Image 1: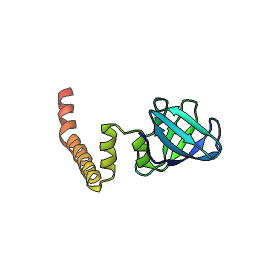
Image 2: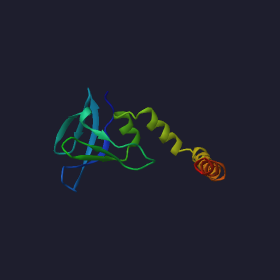
Image 3: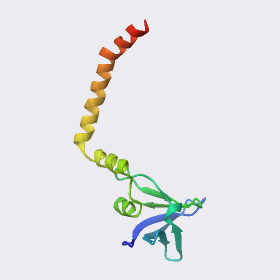
Length: 125
């Protein structure tokens, strides 16, 4: 799978200094390139954080190095999210789903205290 390069910031293991890099993938290998060097890492050795709204994604390499990127769609193309992660991402971006979750949580809490807790107390007593 070859794709347009994804911008990112590379942090070497044990360093807080960021270096601009471009990410791309080919034949199961993640290619990380800066102005001065080029590195290839097997995709199986890279762990990508889950997509959470518009937060920066972090790719953790086996040696402890990290690549940070704001290109969520690009990272998803390189590391396709699992079915559950896609569902959660979709729900986080829909106000109706958030509102429904809030209503269900409140209703469940009220029902527990009005019916569930008295029933449980009666059974225990």
